[in-house]
Image 1 (cartoon, rainbow, N blue to C red):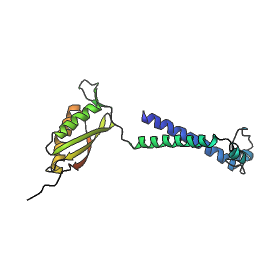
Image 2 (cartoon, rainbow, N blue to C red; image 1 turned 45 degrees about the vertical axis):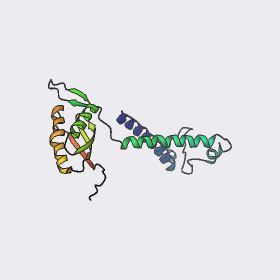
Image 3 (cartoon, rainbow, N blue to C red; image 1 turned 60 degrees about the vertical axis):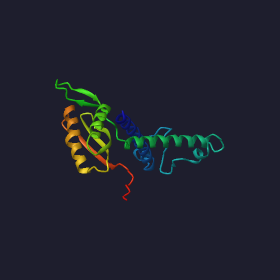
Length: 198
């Protein structure tokens, strides 16, 4: 869905910028006079001395009370849409389903959230991990597990990562029949109060 919207928006923006650039280039270089052809009457740039916005265009709605509120509202809506689009690009998209090898040659689909919850439960069963959060991104055939781990005070990060890789991720990869299950882990320590020694 996002990929289709992105391609459509980029195509529309690109076509608009290309048309505007061609119109400015045609008028600025006075190509219609040099090459001997006529441009339509609605064409915005007719020669090198033409301006983008003339006096009539700038002052046409100056005395109308609605002009500036409408212009500002349109610009605000455009800014909000562009910011939403930018944030949608930066956000990592969650895998909805994971393609699993069912052994019959056709395969099956497992809900991505179900696999995330199984991975989370297995990760939290590892000694030294207080809490885990797993999010699957990437492609359905090659997901990437983004794992956030909160470690207990006594846990050794190297041991926790080794157990996560050797047990949790291997078990999920073999259960789903995936060729590989890449993972990125982010470790944090659980906050606790310092103990007083008397």
